[in-house]
Image (cartoon, rainbow, N blue to C red; front, side, top):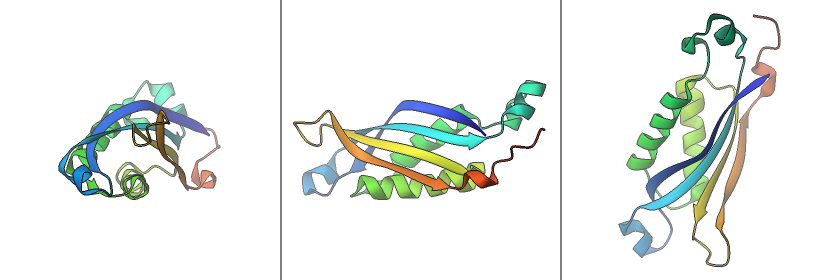
Amino acid sequence: MDRVLIEALVVETVIGVYDWERTIRQRLVMDLEMATDIRAAAADDDLTHTLDYAAISARIQTFAEESHFELVETFAERLAALLREEFGIPWLTMTVRKPGAVPEAAAVGVRIVRGSLETVSDAPA
C-alpha cells in the first residue's frame, strides 16, 4: 500500500463558534495522507493512474472557500467524506490545525482516519 501526501496545505475559511469568528476568514493548516496503489502510474508515468495531489489541493481550497462551519471537527469530517467520494480514496488520514485559536499553543486541531486499508490492492498491477 502506497500513500500520497499533501503537507501543510493552507486554506482560509469561516470557522469558529464565537460570533466574531463568523464574520472573518481564518487560516487552517492541513496534512493529508491518502492510500493508493501507485504502481500503474509509475509504470506508465501516467498521472491518471494515481491520486492527483494538485486536483485534490484545488478541491480542498474550493471546499474551504465555500464552507461555514463552527467546528474544526465538522470541517474535517465533511471534507474527508467529499474527498473519498470524489477521488475514490479508500483510506485517508487528515490533520486539520487552527493556528492561534489558543494563545498558549502553536495550533489546535483534529486528526481523523477514515476508510479501510483492506480495500487498497497489494496485488501486482
